[in-house]
Amino acid sequence: MTGGSDRFALTAEQYLAKYHVLTYLQDAVAQLLEHKEENPRVIPARFLSDYFRSVVQGNHTLFREYSYIRKTPHNTASFIRVFWKCFRHIGMNGDLLSAKEYHSLICLLCPDFPFEPVQKTARIILMEDAMDCLMSFPDFLYAFQTQFFYDEFIEKLHGAYQALLSGTYRPGQIVVAVPTLSTPVQHKSQQSQNAGHETSQVNSGDGVDVHSFLEAALQIIHTSNGTFSCPPVDVIKDLLLSVERVTFYGFLIGLAKHAGVNESIATLPDKSAIMEETDQELSSPAPRPKSGRSKSAMSNSAKKAL
Image (cartoon, rainbow, N blue to C red; front, side, top):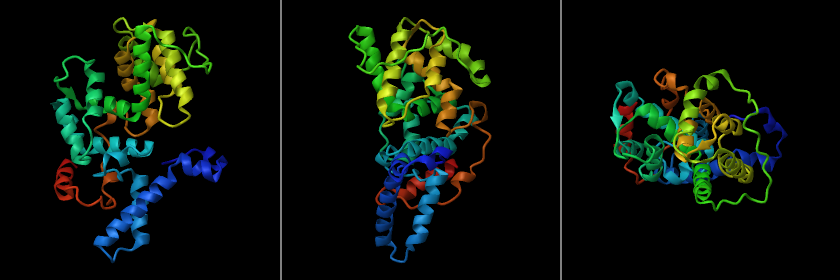
């Protein structure tokens, strides 16, 4: 929920829209009214203070419904971080789990979480083959972050990729400047170290012409108008810089492993440090979730995980 200095240049309407202030205000009031029915002595100012503190800390999505998690990019990123903090002991133990088992863990935090995003995550890791195979926690975590946070972008890109394969893709009317892939690109040192491995993933298989794929990706970003989250353009260019053809899932694997994606979403630490941080951020009490969701059973499971 942190913003850059440019937030001071926004109008009131732009600020409210960019940071989804009205979304949180509406939810806070709804939660307060429901909680007040069960506890008439609740102090509204304290409840609202606790609510917005939990939003800033990022633990406000715990035990909330899927529709709420998907309402804002901050909610989505916060849920990914909560999932990591609750179940990172799986990575410490080196356990390997199936897609269904990861889905069961996620449902402890969000009971109505659909299986489809988890299934799509598994496809990134397993390349659509052997979907029943087991996955390590770090592999699943970073692929899940990419798939879940950039879900709409990935869905639109998949449609464009299928059209490219069939020869039916037609660029939109908006002209998108596609850079020459031989042009040098400035890289951060950490990204450069991983570029060779990520490029090999992107270039696996036959796939489609990389220039057409890049044009389609940039077209989606250009027309999104900020209505859904997209990967940084420089990351996409970096992945496609030195290849001639690209496969869809090869590109997603490279995206999930690229340090620039993790830095852009800014919710998980570097892969080498996912076992090092403390759990202090989840120690503060979050507002009470809506009633009728088997809160006690879920709370016990989450406490054991923590």
